[in-house]
Image (tube, rainbow, N blue to C red; front, side, top):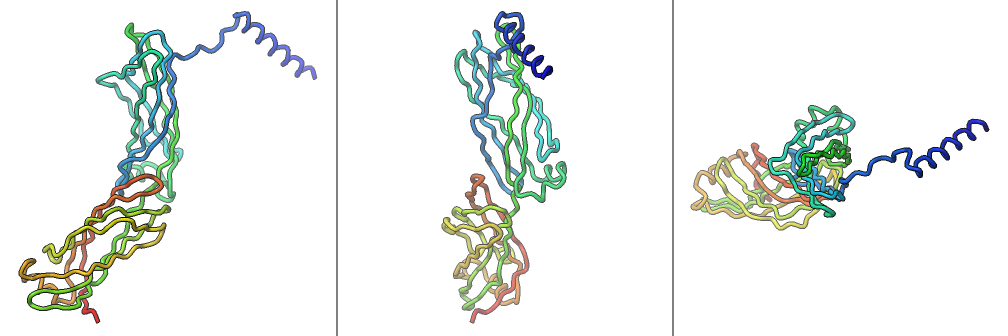
Length: 284
């Protein structure tokens, strides 16, 4: 009871002193930095950019400018990188106005996997950014504002592309009719929705087919999507060498493609080039 009474008495005394102005309250900051939203951009199999959109509110009597900032990025509890930047053109903060800026954080998967142990085993990684922004007014007076924001981003697994054996229906000296089939496997923990897929197919260095497959198809997590394209060739256009290639039991083929894919993490870029010795079979 004695300790409780003592604590209550001290709190009362501090309150009275603050009211009387004898104990200074924490200084109010003229500038406040807050997080508006975050977004993932330019995601592909090499990495992504995690963008923090910030609001900077100034209640100062004079205008300030953001001239420099430094921050560090921590991923899954491990330091990833640190950066210090001086702006060539300082960002002006007008009095009683809110200024919006973006803070992009570039994540490169190859670098991340080397620096952060175990991150390859998680479907998504947690990170936080902490640092300080340095503002100055026309007289050179500075305000240093600390900030800290957190975010998540996926560890994107490259899609697995497999070209199936070429099923030749007809083959003459003038042309051929065959089916090109290939699959795209989604090894990620989230669903993907394919946009238009631009593709090109080469047989032993000769382009025999190219076009665009309509979008709208979805690939669930750990599932695959199979495409089958019925194609016709004119050997007088693509070259007699292709006719000779189609008479072999197999040929070196290259299938490449580009698309934009939608996901819960935003839009990502899909590019692939699958090369290999592909079996050629006669369709029944």
